[in-house]
Amino acid sequence: MNKFILQLFVITVITGVIYFFIGQSLPPKFFFEGYIIVLSLFFVVTLLFHIGLQKSFEKGSKDFIRYYMGATGMKLFLFLMIILIYAFLNKEKAVAFALTFFFFYLIFTVFEVSIATKLFGKHAAAAKKQNEQSSNSEIS
Image 1 (cartoon, helix red, strand yellow):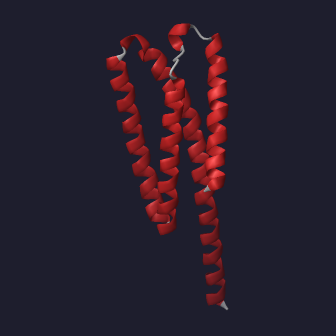
Image 2: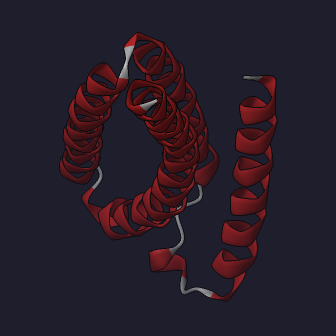
Image 3: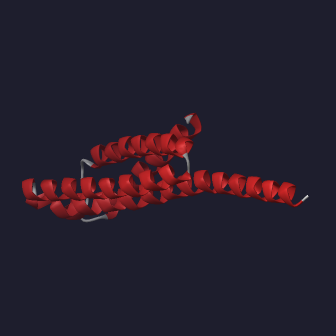
């Protein structure tokens, strides 16, 4: 878990720095000054998502898949609601907020999927190896 937190922290800092430098070349109407808040939101949501993913993984592959699909759907709905509420409350900054949110969403989604693939891939490979060993012992 500590390795994940370190990776998440590094990806958060790198993404924030990249956005800051990209923002310097963007027109002001496309740069969201409060991007640190959005970035912090993604850090917290990703951390909570991963904690739940770890717990579901310990219960088995079916729980892992159910959790992953359900939590991903809930996150998407939550993020859509955040964007819509912000857009209704701050019409003049809605485009900048939505673009910033989308940028961070893409980066953190790629990060989450890569971590989940590694986690589930190791489990699937171990289960396959165990099934092959039990099949070989039944044949003998």
